Length: 403
Ligand SMILES: NC(=O)c1ccc[n+]([C@@H]2O[C@H](COP(=O)([O-])OP(=O)(O)OC[C@H]3O[C@@H](n4cnc5c(N)ncnc54)[C@H](O)[C@@H]3O)[C@@H](O)[C@H]2O)c1
Image (tube, rainbow, N blue to C red; front, side, top):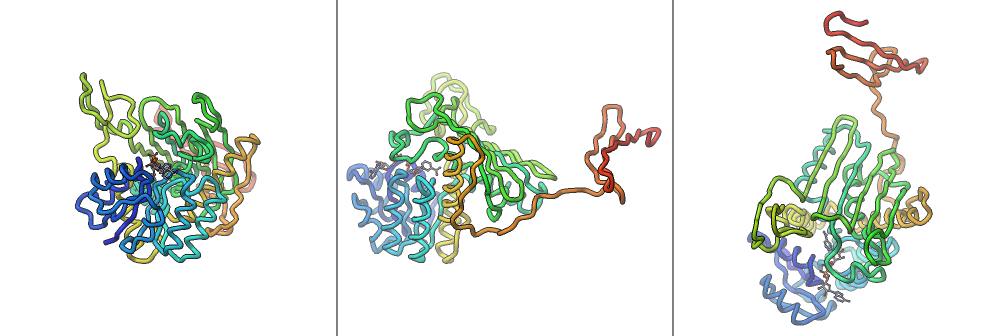
């Protein structure tokens, strides 16, 4: 059992409180911080939280609080982490960790110097489907991962500060690229170094200083590529999809929109449908249990288990820092229109990773390039001679044998 202070009584604070109190959960939110007293009180009443405060310092120093959960706008993460680390509390911080890698590194230093348990609240690597897919990939189900593609698109965020670059630190690349990048890292291997990135980012639709659309590729030392696609101008709801290609298989994950639960409502009297759903009428696409489907439940289970065991959870501030370094490189690439190096000041993964290799010997003299059953029933085998390098093919007819 753990006692928690949540900083921030907004959208994510709500999801976190629902998730932590969940279904008769033993962990409790003891204090909610909101800069506005009446919002704090209302939030406390809604979630059965005994105390509320308008002081971050009072919340983190409250003697009953063991864990501080940060759900504040991006510009406030750094100061909140500093205060909580000084108070010696375990700290779990929402995404993105910093507005840039410099802030993220400072946060990492604060928690490591204080010696407190720290977790990076990247919920989308904890969705039930993603957890199962990552487990399958790690146990070898799809061979070596060559490409991991992750997409998060929706019609844009729900509060003014996201759209204000000085507060948020960036646009959709920072806000949602962070999810996609960490999902791809989990599939490709978090110990494999991200070396360089290519990114396109532009402001296509909204009247804002930051980018509202971005695409990018993160190249890892072993040759694998993580691709992200993010948009704040997608119409039709929230689309969270991932595809992973391996030498022996493929994973397709659809986490949210149109996953097999559809309702038709002529009157649209049902109210809230799902996060970022644009329609409450006609055919709608609800989500059974959003807190579970979006990964919050499994994420907090990992976080609280780690806290109790005094261990690291699966996602730490170090992961948040790596993601921020990758995104900084993406912003450089979007400006230069060139591949840009990821400047990891601190790298804790493998130092040298061999390039991916999945060559298959066919016989003593040949490597197998490709085998395919043709429409006439024959089997075509394409080979490469190991000595000469020559590519050749043979066609085995099901009736007559090799021709
Ligand atoms: N999937 C996820 O993990 C996820 C989803 C949404 C948001 N987030 C993150 O959570 C954080 C908060 O986002 P949100 O969606 O809850 O935003 P929000 O606007 O819904 O809530 C933010 C809260 O902070 C308060 N606030 C704003 N400015 C403040 C200030 N200067 N001082 C003190 N309090 C202030 C607001 O009143 C509000 O209660 C962001 O870092 C965001 O990236 C994560």
